[in-house]
Length: 514
Ligand code: NAD
Image (cartoon, rainbow, N blue to C red; front, side, top):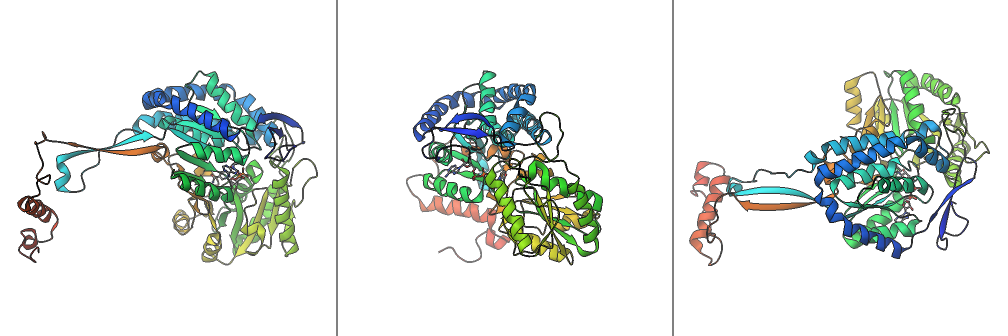
């Protein structure tokens, strides 16, 4: 718990460092009325922001990028204080957002420019067609606790560049970094089109009630209830939810790279990454070698609470509850016959849980079926590629996956058989650094996608269709009033000429029109 009172009654949230339990800050719990007021202010400020155009907005985002880079160390301190991350993990976030700003600010003009599609039929050529991208006035962004700067940044930046005002509701577990993020926007003197509303789920629900588009990242359970709330209001939404990402290690893989990559992909950010490797399927001929190498790599990792020193590889878990989920998954697996080759218990200090490798697991176990979101890597031996694919797809989730192989064609072929929104070949988490690609989960892992080149900005826009005559308009059109059979026949004849197959049919010499 992040507060000393029940969430419903708390006036403020006490934020703790999970590595040592220390209180590191407090934020208010914003009421539904306060959220509605903030949304109204954003709504009033948005038209001027939209009017700046993509280049004008990009200039503000470049200033914000400078602010982020100048404050990187301080933001890293705040991040560590509320998450218990290692410095290595904390240092990923600011550069990631700065990189994202660079990409979308440079391309905003191009991605949001009017589109002029060709008419669908020759008869339509008399019209000039235009698709205009007009922002949703207020976009709500609700984020989880695993990347307290990167998560807000990933969605707030494209929404702002699209021309929307943004109401950000960060996780109650890690609100301090988001508050700093909002402070940065104010400090650079930017227009008041970004606001941060802190609080629990009820504050998030108030955000849903007051925005025109909702971008949510979090658990599948909460995502489902948000989808229902958005449906009630008939507002569009995009959901980035949980995952149980499989890794497939084929017998022709470079086993050293696979072991190193899976150790990192499973344990970076203490395993609290939506796209972290959560289960591994290894072809029988290389299973023993892979398990030995993975166990050695994971066993050598340094765990603890560091400052700016980069002294440790694996940090604390974000909450005691998260540590308890990890412990339960390991205990249930061991009770059902699995074996721990390294790690396997909480350290007893803060929320730390040892980096863990589990073998002899099967598909009935919670460590394989449920999202763990912690520092565990369960490994299963499979007979062949087909069994690996079948087991990888045997999940309600479909966020991302990895394939490790020495054969590029085989890697691509396996990727295309996996039920996942992204597949990284011989790498882990790489799709999260590829903003030109869509990042979206399949099945229970989400609806829609963040990023994906132009689509990453256009999703925050309403598409407006505009038609205009190419020729000087007549006083009236043949199909306007009064209705005349001759005109209808003429229009039908043109349509038939354009679409019918074969000369007889084009000339109306086939079946008669009744
Ligand atoms: P969560 O669903 O408990 O909370 C997420 C956010 O939703 C928080 O800000 C919370 O206050 C808010 N919220 C809760 N109830 C709400 C309601 N009824 N209406 C509106 N807002 C509400 O998730 P979490 O525990 O903070 O985060 C962990 C989860 O996030 C994991 O399942 C992880 O896989 C997922 N995640 C997914 C991605 C992705 O891109 N797919 C990325 C990171 C994390």
